[in-house]
Amino acid sequence: MRRSLLIAAFACFTLSGATLAQQVDVGVASTVSNRVLGSVGARTLKTGDRVFQNENIETGADSRSQLLFRDETVLNVGPDSRVTLDRFVYDPARGGSGAAVSVGRGALRFISGNMPSQSYEIRTPAGSIGVRGTIVDIIVYENGEVVLQLIEGALVFIDLGGRSISLTRPGQVYTLTPGQEGTLGNTLRPKDRRRLAGLNTAITLDELFPRPLELPRRPVTSDSRSQGRATTPAPTPNPITGPTSPTVPGPSP
Image (tube, rainbow, N blue to C red; front, top):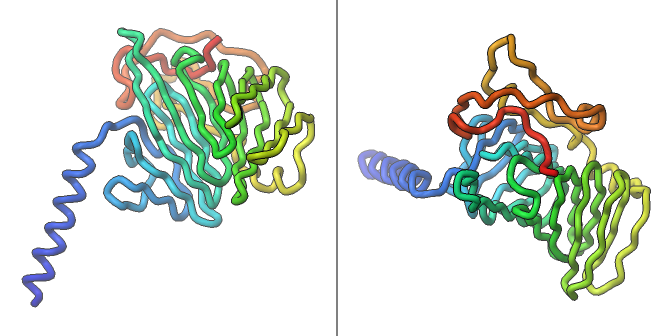
């Protein structure tokens, strides 16, 4: 009996490892707090674990995670959320880059990375978001209601009926329930602010993999972005993006 259990456990471990090896590695869980699940290999994520294309990421109550992708796009995922990493291709040499993420429920802060702005798509139950070099907060409630708050840059939201609306000024808020007309304003509701609490910080590759002291370091936060851009230093190697990727993220023009 004991031998059978050991064989079964080894088989499960081997299958899990093979499953991970066959997936397209798109980034890393740069921070994990409490219980965060990844669907590839049916695993509980730890800080530093890789994340993969087509993977579902789910956070439990009082849990959160930051996902950092190869082009230095950042997703801050709040408690009780579900995000699917639908597609991620980063090939600056050939110009074939593109990323698509679906938000099924919960709260998310999206910070665009080094791809061209038209390369990104964020999908929600009420429509899709096209970014223009953007930081945006997104909430998807259980009834399918979607709330967007533009932090920086610009975005276009296209609802399921094909209607579009642009957010171009930081602080703008757009709220839409499927089947109803959306509303544009400048104020979050109290329940929206509660869902977004704690999503306003992010770390960079520099903080994961320290650089020489002579090179500047700038964390990605809404405050630091609003105070202007630092000059991008010469590319340096890092374990995620390879030897040709820049190490200071910023939204595309």
